[in-house]
Image 1 (cartoon, one colour):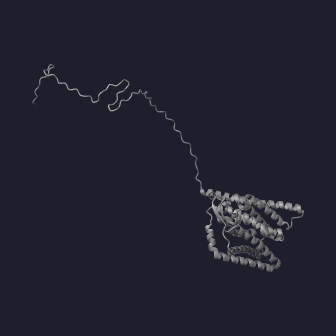
Image 2 (cartoon, one colour):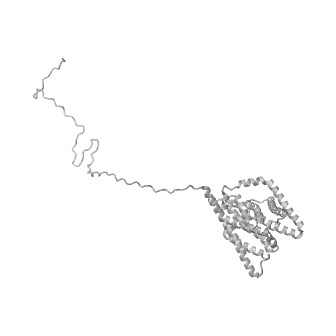
Image 3 (cartoon, rainbow, N blue to C red):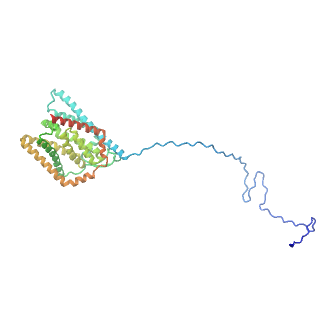
Length: 406
Protein backbone atom coordinates (compact mmCIF):
# COMPACT_ATOMS: atom_id res chain seq x y z
CA UNK A 1 0.00 0.00 0.00
CA UNK A 2 1.03 3.42 -0.66
CA UNK A 3 1.70 5.73 2.25
CA UNK A 4 -0.91 8.37 2.94
CA UNK A 5 -0.54 11.82 4.29
CA UNK A 6 -1.82 12.47 7.74
CA UNK A 7 -5.15 14.06 8.03
CA UNK A 8 -5.59 17.33 9.77
CA UNK A 9 -8.69 18.17 11.71
CA UNK A 10 -11.08 20.51 9.97
CA UNK A 11 -11.25 24.02 11.24
CA UNK A 12 -14.50 24.68 12.86
CA UNK A 13 -16.52 27.78 12.48
CA UNK A 14 -15.43 28.84 15.89
CA UNK A 15 -11.75 28.50 15.39
CA UNK A 16 -9.70 30.25 17.99
CA UNK A 17 -7.91 31.95 15.21
CA UNK A 18 -10.23 33.93 12.93
CA UNK A 19 -9.74 33.68 9.21
CA UNK A 20 -7.47 36.31 7.91
CA UNK A 21 -9.09 38.87 5.54
CA UNK A 22 -7.16 40.14 2.52
CA UNK A 23 -6.29 43.79 2.56
CA UNK A 24 -8.37 46.00 0.25
CA UNK A 25 -6.68 46.62 -3.11
CA UNK A 26 -7.07 49.80 -5.27
CA UNK A 27 -9.22 49.53 -8.34
CA UNK A 28 -7.39 49.38 -11.64
CA UNK A 29 -9.71 52.09 -12.93
CA UNK A 30 -11.16 54.26 -10.25
CA UNK A 31 -14.74 55.24 -10.77
CA UNK A 32 -15.68 58.82 -10.43
CA UNK A 33 -19.18 59.93 -10.17
CA UNK A 34 -20.50 61.22 -13.46
CA UNK A 35 -23.27 63.68 -13.98
CA UNK A 36 -26.48 62.56 -15.47
CA UNK A 37 -26.41 62.67 -19.27
CA UNK A 38 -22.84 61.51 -19.60
CA UNK A 39 -21.82 58.07 -20.62
CA UNK A 40 -18.92 56.30 -19.01
CA UNK A 41 -15.78 56.73 -21.04
CA UNK A 42 -12.53 54.87 -21.11
CA UNK A 43 -10.09 55.89 -18.49
CA UNK A 44 -7.57 57.29 -20.84
CA UNK A 45 -10.09 59.43 -22.72
CA UNK A 46 -11.44 62.77 -21.73
CA UNK A 47 -15.11 62.88 -20.85
CA UNK A 48 -17.33 63.18 -23.94
CA UNK A 49 -20.92 64.37 -24.04
CA UNK A 50 -23.55 61.82 -24.61
CA UNK A 51 -25.31 62.22 -27.94
CA UNK A 52 -28.52 60.45 -28.64
CA UNK A 53 -28.08 58.91 -32.09
CA UNK A 54 -30.89 58.05 -34.41
CA UNK A 55 -31.52 54.42 -34.94
CA UNK A 56 -29.59 53.06 -37.88
CA UNK A 57 -31.59 52.73 -41.07
CA UNK A 58 -31.77 49.26 -42.41
CA UNK A 59 -29.41 48.76 -45.30
CA UNK A 60 -31.24 47.49 -48.34
CA UNK A 61 -29.66 46.56 -51.64
CA UNK A 62 -31.35 48.03 -54.70
CA UNK A 63 -32.98 45.64 -57.01
CA UNK A 64 -30.67 44.65 -59.83
CA UNK A 65 -31.41 46.77 -62.90
CA UNK A 66 -31.41 45.02 -66.22
CA UNK A 67 -28.08 45.50 -67.96
CA UNK A 68 -28.36 47.79 -71.02
CA UNK A 69 -26.45 46.91 -74.15
CA UNK A 70 -24.21 49.71 -75.56
CA UNK A 71 -25.27 51.25 -78.85
CA UNK A 72 -23.78 49.53 -81.85
CA UNK A 73 -20.81 51.43 -83.25
CA UNK A 74 -20.99 52.22 -86.98
CA UNK A 75 -18.70 50.16 -89.12
CA UNK A 76 -16.03 52.42 -90.64
CA UNK A 77 -14.43 51.09 -93.76
CA UNK A 78 -10.70 51.76 -94.13
CA UNK A 79 -9.88 54.69 -96.43
CA UNK A 80 -7.49 54.07 -99.27
CA UNK A 81 -5.16 57.12 -99.38
CA UNK A 82 -4.33 56.48 -103.02
CA UNK A 83 -8.00 56.70 -103.91
CA UNK A 84 -8.33 59.97 -101.99
CA UNK A 85 -5.40 61.55 -103.82
CA UNK A 86 -6.68 60.32 -107.17
CA UNK A 87 -9.97 62.06 -106.45
CA UNK A 88 -8.20 65.31 -105.58
CA UNK A 89 -6.08 65.16 -108.72
CA UNK A 90 -9.14 64.67 -110.85
CA UNK A 91 -10.70 67.70 -109.18
CA UNK A 92 -7.63 69.83 -109.92
CA UNK A 93 -7.60 68.77 -113.58
CA UNK A 94 -11.38 69.01 -113.86
CA UNK A 95 -11.39 72.60 -112.64
CA UNK A 96 -8.84 74.02 -115.06
CA UNK A 97 -10.05 71.90 -117.98
CA UNK A 98 -13.55 73.19 -117.37
CA UNK A 99 -12.15 76.69 -117.80
CA UNK A 100 -10.40 75.60 -121.02
CA UNK A 101 -13.65 74.14 -122.36
CA UNK A 102 -15.44 77.36 -121.51
CA UNK A 103 -12.71 79.36 -123.28
CA UNK A 104 -13.16 77.28 -126.42
CA UNK A 105 -16.90 77.67 -126.20
CA UNK A 106 -16.55 81.43 -125.90
CA UNK A 107 -14.37 81.43 -129.02
CA UNK A 108 -17.06 79.58 -130.96
CA UNK A 109 -19.72 81.93 -129.63
CA UNK A 110 -17.60 84.95 -130.51
CA UNK A 111 -17.03 83.62 -134.03
CA UNK A 112 -20.76 83.10 -134.55
CA UNK A 113 -21.62 86.58 -133.29
CA UNK A 114 -18.81 88.15 -135.33
CA UNK A 115 -19.97 86.36 -138.48
CA UNK A 116 -23.49 87.67 -138.03
CA UNK A 117 -22.35 91.22 -137.27
CA UNK A 118 -19.89 91.38 -140.16
CA UNK A 119 -22.46 89.90 -142.52
CA UNK A 120 -25.08 92.45 -141.51
CA UNK A 121 -22.71 95.41 -141.69
CA UNK A 122 -21.07 94.53 -144.99
CA UNK A 123 -24.15 92.90 -146.52
CA UNK A 124 -21.82 90.68 -148.48
CA UNK A 125 -21.08 87.01 -148.88
CA UNK A 126 -18.64 85.78 -146.23
CA UNK A 127 -17.64 82.65 -148.10
CA UNK A 128 -14.32 84.26 -149.04
CA UNK A 129 -11.27 84.72 -146.85
CA UNK A 130 -11.12 88.50 -146.67
CA UNK A 131 -13.04 88.60 -143.37
CA UNK A 132 -11.53 85.50 -141.74
CA UNK A 133 -8.92 87.53 -139.90
CA UNK A 134 -11.49 89.96 -138.51
CA UNK A 135 -13.78 87.17 -137.34
CA UNK A 136 -10.84 85.34 -135.76
CA UNK A 137 -9.73 88.48 -133.91
CA UNK A 138 -13.23 89.13 -132.55
CA UNK A 139 -13.65 85.54 -131.41
CA UNK A 140 -10.31 85.43 -129.59
CA UNK A 141 -10.94 88.81 -127.93
CA UNK A 142 -14.28 87.55 -126.61
CA UNK A 143 -12.67 84.39 -125.22
CA UNK A 144 -9.71 86.27 -123.76
CA UNK A 145 -12.03 88.74 -122.06
CA UNK A 146 -13.81 85.80 -120.44
CA UNK A 147 -10.44 84.41 -119.30
CA UNK A 148 -9.47 87.76 -117.77
CA UNK A 149 -12.76 87.84 -115.90
CA UNK A 150 -12.18 84.38 -114.43
CA UNK A 151 -8.45 84.64 -113.63
CA UNK A 152 -7.73 88.36 -113.32
CA UNK A 153 -6.17 87.94 -109.85
CA UNK A 154 -3.45 85.72 -111.31
CA UNK A 155 -3.01 87.35 -114.69
CA UNK A 156 -2.55 90.88 -113.35
CA UNK A 157 0.57 90.03 -111.35
CA UNK A 158 4.25 90.37 -112.20
CA UNK A 159 4.95 86.75 -111.22
CA UNK A 160 2.46 85.54 -113.83
CA UNK A 161 4.42 87.14 -116.67
CA UNK A 162 8.00 87.32 -115.40
CA UNK A 163 8.09 84.25 -113.17
CA UNK A 164 9.34 83.94 -109.62
CA UNK A 165 8.03 82.80 -106.29
CA UNK A 166 4.28 82.65 -105.88
CA UNK A 167 1.77 81.19 -103.46
CA UNK A 168 0.04 78.10 -104.81
CA UNK A 169 -3.70 78.72 -104.98
CA UNK A 170 -4.43 75.46 -106.79
CA UNK A 171 -3.40 71.85 -106.44
CA UNK A 172 -3.88 69.25 -103.73
CA UNK A 173 -4.92 70.08 -100.13
CA UNK A 174 -1.41 69.78 -98.72
CA UNK A 175 -0.06 72.16 -101.37
CA UNK A 176 -2.46 75.07 -101.09
CA UNK A 177 -0.79 78.20 -99.77
CA UNK A 178 2.76 76.90 -100.23
CA UNK A 179 5.38 79.15 -101.76
CA UNK A 180 6.80 77.62 -104.93
CA UNK A 181 8.89 78.70 -107.88
CA UNK A 182 7.31 79.20 -111.28
CA UNK A 183 9.79 80.41 -113.88
CA UNK A 184 12.17 83.14 -112.86
CA UNK A 185 15.27 81.75 -114.56
CA UNK A 186 17.58 84.05 -116.46
CA UNK A 187 17.55 83.41 -120.18
CA UNK A 188 20.97 83.20 -121.81
CA UNK A 189 21.45 84.09 -125.52
CA UNK A 190 22.81 80.61 -126.24
CA UNK A 191 19.75 78.97 -124.70
CA UNK A 192 17.41 81.27 -126.65
CA UNK A 193 19.15 80.22 -129.86
CA UNK A 194 18.88 76.56 -128.88
CA UNK A 195 15.13 76.85 -128.29
CA UNK A 196 14.73 78.47 -131.72
CA UNK A 197 16.68 75.60 -133.29
CA UNK A 198 14.53 73.06 -131.44
CA UNK A 199 11.42 74.78 -132.78
CA UNK A 200 12.85 74.61 -136.28
CA UNK A 201 13.62 70.94 -135.68
CA UNK A 202 10.02 70.17 -134.72
CA UNK A 203 8.76 72.02 -137.77
CA UNK A 204 11.34 70.21 -139.89
CA UNK A 205 10.24 66.78 -138.66
CA UNK A 206 6.60 67.49 -139.53
CA UNK A 207 7.56 68.84 -142.95
CA UNK A 208 9.84 65.90 -143.75
CA UNK A 209 7.02 63.49 -142.85
CA UNK A 210 4.70 65.39 -145.19
CA UNK A 211 7.28 65.28 -147.98
CA UNK A 212 7.77 61.54 -147.43
CA UNK A 213 4.03 60.88 -147.73
CA UNK A 214 3.91 63.13 -150.77
CA UNK A 215 6.64 61.07 -152.44
CA UNK A 216 4.53 57.99 -151.77
CA UNK A 217 1.63 59.58 -153.61
CA UNK A 218 -0.38 60.74 -150.58
CA UNK A 219 -0.51 64.31 -149.41
CA UNK A 220 -1.24 64.76 -145.70
CA UNK A 221 -4.05 67.28 -145.64
CA UNK A 222 -4.04 70.08 -143.09
CA UNK A 223 -7.25 72.12 -143.35
CA UNK A 224 -6.11 74.61 -140.71
CA UNK A 225 -2.80 75.31 -142.42
CA UNK A 226 -4.49 75.64 -145.81
CA UNK A 227 -7.05 78.09 -144.44
CA UNK A 228 -4.39 80.22 -142.76
CA UNK A 229 -2.24 80.21 -145.90
CA UNK A 230 -5.17 81.39 -148.02
CA UNK A 231 -6.21 84.19 -145.69
CA UNK A 232 -2.74 85.29 -144.59
CA UNK A 233 -2.71 87.86 -147.37
CA UNK A 234 -4.87 90.13 -145.19
CA UNK A 235 -3.43 92.29 -142.43
CA UNK A 236 -6.06 91.13 -139.95
CA UNK A 237 -5.17 87.45 -140.39
CA UNK A 238 -1.44 88.14 -140.21
CA UNK A 239 -2.06 90.14 -137.01
CA UNK A 240 -4.11 87.28 -135.60
CA UNK A 241 -1.66 84.50 -136.47
CA UNK A 242 1.55 86.38 -135.79
CA UNK A 243 0.74 88.37 -132.65
CA UNK A 244 -2.67 88.05 -131.00
CA UNK A 245 -3.08 84.27 -131.11
CA UNK A 246 0.39 83.51 -129.66
CA UNK A 247 -0.20 85.87 -126.73
CA UNK A 248 -3.69 84.56 -125.93
CA UNK A 249 -2.71 80.92 -126.36
CA UNK A 250 0.33 81.25 -124.13
CA UNK A 251 -1.68 82.98 -121.42
CA UNK A 252 -4.26 80.18 -121.49
CA UNK A 253 -2.11 77.08 -121.95
CA UNK A 254 1.20 78.00 -120.31
CA UNK A 255 0.03 80.74 -117.96
CA UNK A 256 -3.24 79.43 -116.55
CA UNK A 257 -3.48 75.74 -117.45
CA UNK A 258 0.12 74.69 -116.84
CA UNK A 259 0.49 76.83 -113.73
CA UNK A 260 -2.58 75.32 -112.09
CA UNK A 261 -1.36 71.82 -112.94
CA UNK A 262 2.19 72.49 -111.71
CA UNK A 263 1.49 71.31 -108.10
CA UNK A 264 0.88 67.84 -109.57
CA UNK A 265 4.39 67.79 -111.03
CA UNK A 266 6.29 69.75 -113.67
CA UNK A 267 6.40 66.86 -116.13
CA UNK A 268 2.67 66.28 -115.80
CA UNK A 269 1.91 69.97 -116.24
CA UNK A 270 4.13 70.37 -119.32
CA UNK A 271 2.86 67.22 -121.06
CA UNK A 272 -0.80 67.88 -120.29
CA UNK A 273 -0.68 71.50 -121.43
CA UNK A 274 1.11 70.47 -124.64
CA UNK A 275 -1.49 67.78 -125.34
CA UNK A 276 -4.38 70.17 -124.79
CA UNK A 277 -2.61 72.78 -126.91
CA UNK A 278 -2.27 70.29 -129.77
CA UNK A 279 -5.89 69.14 -129.60
CA UNK A 280 -7.04 72.76 -129.45
CA UNK A 281 -5.94 73.25 -133.09
CA UNK A 282 -8.48 70.65 -134.32
CA UNK A 283 -6.08 69.46 -137.00
CA UNK A 284 -4.07 66.23 -137.18
CA UNK A 285 -0.98 67.67 -138.86
CA UNK A 286 -1.07 71.08 -137.21
CA UNK A 287 -1.97 69.49 -133.88
CA UNK A 288 1.03 67.16 -134.02
CA UNK A 289 3.35 70.11 -134.54
CA UNK A 290 1.56 72.08 -131.79
CA UNK A 291 2.01 69.22 -129.31
CA UNK A 292 5.76 68.88 -129.95
CA UNK A 293 6.27 72.63 -130.01
CA UNK A 294 4.13 72.91 -126.87
CA UNK A 295 6.64 70.76 -124.97
CA UNK A 296 9.35 73.31 -125.76
CA UNK A 297 7.11 76.26 -124.89
CA UNK A 298 6.08 74.56 -121.65
CA UNK A 299 9.68 74.05 -120.55
CA UNK A 300 10.54 77.68 -121.38
CA UNK A 301 7.57 79.03 -119.42
CA UNK A 302 8.16 76.66 -116.50
CA UNK A 303 11.85 77.46 -116.06
CA UNK A 304 12.13 81.02 -117.37
CA UNK A 305 8.93 83.02 -117.82
CA UNK A 306 5.73 83.34 -119.78
CA UNK A 307 7.21 86.32 -121.62
CA UNK A 308 9.92 84.11 -123.13
CA UNK A 309 7.43 81.47 -124.26
CA UNK A 310 5.32 84.21 -125.87
CA UNK A 311 8.40 85.60 -127.62
CA UNK A 312 9.35 82.15 -128.94
CA UNK A 313 5.78 81.51 -130.08
CA UNK A 314 5.61 84.87 -131.89
CA UNK A 315 8.99 84.26 -133.52
CA UNK A 316 7.81 80.92 -134.87
CA UNK A 317 4.46 82.20 -136.16
CA UNK A 318 5.42 85.65 -137.37
CA UNK A 319 9.01 85.11 -138.56
CA UNK A 320 9.70 81.47 -139.41
CA UNK A 321 6.25 80.48 -140.62
CA UNK A 322 5.21 84.00 -141.56
CA UNK A 323 7.62 86.54 -142.97
CA UNK A 324 10.42 84.20 -144.09
CA UNK A 325 8.06 81.66 -145.58
CA UNK A 326 6.00 84.35 -147.35
CA UNK A 327 9.05 86.07 -148.81
CA UNK A 328 10.49 82.79 -150.00
CA UNK A 329 7.20 81.83 -151.61
CA UNK A 330 6.89 85.17 -153.38
CA UNK A 331 10.44 85.44 -154.73
CA UNK A 332 11.35 81.81 -155.41
CA UNK A 333 9.93 79.38 -157.90
CA UNK A 334 8.45 76.10 -156.77
CA UNK A 335 11.67 74.07 -156.95
CA UNK A 336 13.74 76.76 -155.24
CA UNK A 337 11.08 77.19 -152.55
CA UNK A 338 11.04 73.44 -151.93
CA UNK A 339 14.83 73.36 -151.64
CA UNK A 340 14.77 76.34 -149.28
CA UNK A 341 12.12 74.77 -147.07
CA UNK A 342 13.91 71.42 -146.98
CA UNK A 343 17.17 73.15 -146.12
CA UNK A 344 15.60 74.88 -143.13
CA UNK A 345 14.04 71.60 -142.05
CA UNK A 346 17.32 69.70 -142.29
CA UNK A 347 19.16 72.45 -140.40
CA UNK A 348 16.55 72.31 -137.65
CA UNK A 349 16.60 68.51 -137.38
CA UNK A 350 20.41 68.26 -137.37
CA UNK A 351 20.67 71.11 -134.87
CA UNK A 352 18.12 69.41 -132.60
CA UNK A 353 20.05 66.15 -132.75
CA UNK A 354 23.26 67.94 -131.76
CA UNK A 355 21.47 69.61 -128.84
CA UNK A 356 20.11 66.27 -127.62
CA UNK A 357 23.56 64.69 -127.87
CA UNK A 358 25.22 67.49 -125.89
CA UNK A 359 22.48 68.09 -123.31
CA UNK A 360 20.73 64.74 -123.34
CA UNK A 361 22.04 63.81 -119.88
CA UNK A 362 20.75 67.05 -118.36
CA UNK A 363 17.37 66.54 -120.05
CA UNK A 364 17.05 63.03 -118.62
CA UNK A 365 18.06 64.31 -115.20
CA UNK A 366 15.40 67.03 -115.42
CA UNK A 367 12.81 64.42 -116.34
CA UNK A 368 13.76 62.19 -113.39
CA UNK A 369 13.89 65.07 -110.94
CA UNK A 370 10.45 66.39 -111.87
CA UNK A 371 8.75 63.04 -112.30
CA UNK A 372 5.25 63.03 -110.91
CA UNK A 373 4.27 60.71 -108.07
CA UNK A 374 2.42 57.49 -108.99
CA UNK A 375 -1.22 57.74 -110.06
CA UNK A 376 -0.88 61.41 -111.05
CA UNK A 377 -1.99 60.67 -114.61
CA UNK A 378 -5.29 59.39 -113.22
CA UNK A 379 -6.12 63.09 -113.32
CA UNK A 380 -6.80 62.59 -117.02
CA UNK A 381 -9.94 60.72 -115.94
CA UNK A 382 -11.52 64.08 -115.07
CA UNK A 383 -14.85 64.50 -116.92
CA UNK A 384 -13.97 67.85 -118.49
CA UNK A 385 -10.63 66.52 -119.72
CA UNK A 386 -12.32 63.52 -121.34
CA UNK A 387 -14.96 65.74 -122.96
CA UNK A 388 -12.30 68.09 -124.34
CA UNK A 389 -10.13 65.28 -125.72
CA UNK A 390 -13.00 63.35 -127.29
CA UNK A 391 -14.66 66.41 -128.85
CA UNK A 392 -11.51 67.95 -130.32
CA UNK A 393 -9.99 64.65 -131.43
CA UNK A 394 -13.23 63.67 -133.15
CA UNK A 395 -13.43 67.02 -134.93
CA UNK A 396 -9.78 66.79 -136.03
CA UNK A 397 -10.16 63.24 -137.34
CA UNK A 398 -13.39 64.01 -139.19
CA UNK A 399 -11.83 67.12 -140.71
CA UNK A 400 -8.69 65.21 -141.69
CA UNK A 401 -10.59 62.32 -143.25
CA UNK A 402 -12.86 64.72 -145.12
CA UNK A 403 -9.89 66.65 -146.50
CA UNK A 404 -8.09 63.46 -147.50
CA UNK A 405 -11.15 62.12 -149.29
CA UNK A 406 -11.94 65.45 -150.93
